Image (cartoon, rainbow, N blue to C red; front, side, top):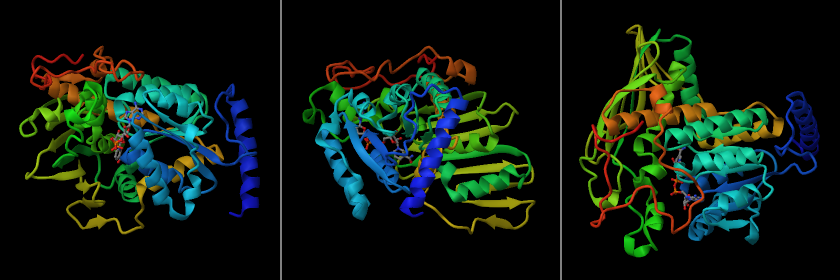
Length: 438
Ligand SMILES: NC(=O)c1ccc[n+]([C@@H]2O[C@H](COP(=O)([O-])OP(=O)(O)OC[C@H]3O[C@@H](n4cnc5c(N)ncnc54)[C@H](O)[C@@H]3O)[C@@H](O)[C@H]2O)c1
């Protein structure tokens, strides 16, 4: 599109957006996309690996776009991220336009970024903070891309669901980092399965079994106290991470929910720490194995394991009345016959999810992925509640749980984290049969 065409197009779409907003009865506290300044101004909260990647992808979308504000609890993370985004953008590095007074460090950085006049915020901190950051962004009328998972406890999911509803009322666009929904292989395979390629889906099997993630990044003698220790090593603390069933296995659980067109109604499971037992690994389990039951009586069989030198697989499979499919592998075998394999174009779903979201912002198209982001997060939390407690739980019991592990995002370095170690540095580990989850 030439500049003139684009400008006219943006004017038209901005006028359409304004008209649409009036029709929706939308009072206008969302920053409707402006034709006068057609640059989409982006802010980044959480300048780690994914935030850096997401910002680079946001800045690689069609049309004028600029990163104008950044926030992190750690200044070193922010500075490194800015350099990496510029490096990734190469000849488009002038899209990074973050003035020194638009770089915010601290637990309140999210508010400062969101209040800095941006159109869209990328929320990519550890997930424990997400419900609060998302709620603030929606209240302030900012479009959102937020990473998965969107919470680490049921109270957080409820907060997100309320904000998703408000975002719809305010005509805000919301993208969630479950990028399989934008990956051509998944889209085509899913379409065929939903069109009945293997008949009714009888069961799904989903796995995130691999050796695990990074080892704790900082030792105690490299940090200023318990809060910084947990924040630097956030993956190993349930309030920040949600355990790895939530942090990573959510991708696979989400694919099963997508195929079934809903969430499980009941679950039971088992899990624990067999291998990753050192105190430096905080409080999370290293394996969970859960049977989720859907409303129609069919099952999703789920495993996630972080252990080295064992059978590994990150994948999703479906068993139907007339065949089976490897969804991630994009193959379908029906009626004992030939196997269909995806041969079409491949894409980078991390880029496409941003292309789609930014196109929706520019063209004022309906766009809200928050609900399935919240539902798949809750599915993972339900699974974790079952493995921690050893109980069978219903969706309703889990979603309405009174056990809130993160109460606020407005912390200080002197705040006491929700979990603390004993005198020897060991954290309390969930104990099936004793641990209370609802
Ligand atoms: N969709 C995907 O495939 C995918 C891939 C990787 C990560 N992620 C998600 O992205 C999120 C971040 O993961 P990551 O790998 O980038 O972690 P990371 O540790 O590299 O980055 C997290 C950043 O957030 C900062 N931070 C922590 N608390 C903050 C707060 N309250 N306010 C501001 N900044 C804060 C940290 O200092 C750090 O810079 C996770 O939820 C993860 O699941 C998604």
